[in-house]
Length: 264
Image 1 (cartoon, rainbow, N blue to C red):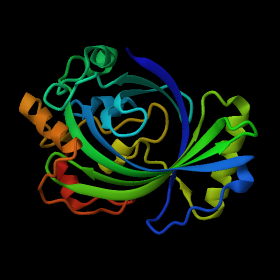
Image 2: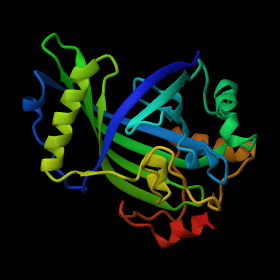
Image 3: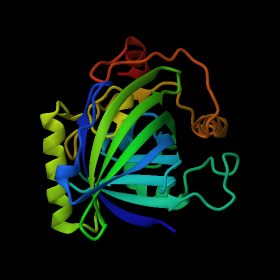
């Protein structure tokens, strides 16, 4: 069954050595929920037509919401609709290679029937802090993410970012708390991240505003529409190591190898 969740978050770019400040003055209660590792395979057409329309589709392992996620723009800043489809009981890499039919159908207006293939693999090491009200209800979350991305040709990128997300059940209070946290982090050196979703960052692109587009001619080289290509990517997302000529890249730049991946 597919679940719809409103996601409202602000992304902040920070250097690798950024120190997360104490957040106790931002909410009645603060609790660190621990660290986790999230492994995701992102799917798109080879010409990135989903990303061009502000949509991302991934299969993620790890975390409370592990499964398939289709994120759609709503037209508002920092606001997206996330459609979640859990990984079925007993589903493993060998059985879960294809995009679920219900999500592929929802994306069809944008894909226009183009095959959805793996275009990037991301490993996120996340530390989460929850901001709560006097009754212990969560109003907002701060996710401190160290991300490593690998493209189909083996090129890689690594960066750190912080996400400040409102809890959709928190109403206006959630917005106020998230605003306080964002202001505090900015005062400590964090900057608004205009690169958009993690996939755009992995590809060295910027998709910041609702409706922003990626150049029409861009494609991802090495992305395969075959079942074997999907299998290789899904296995890697499940924790299998892969070789290649990966090199770390600064978040604000694009390596020469990534330029070669993005063909005009």
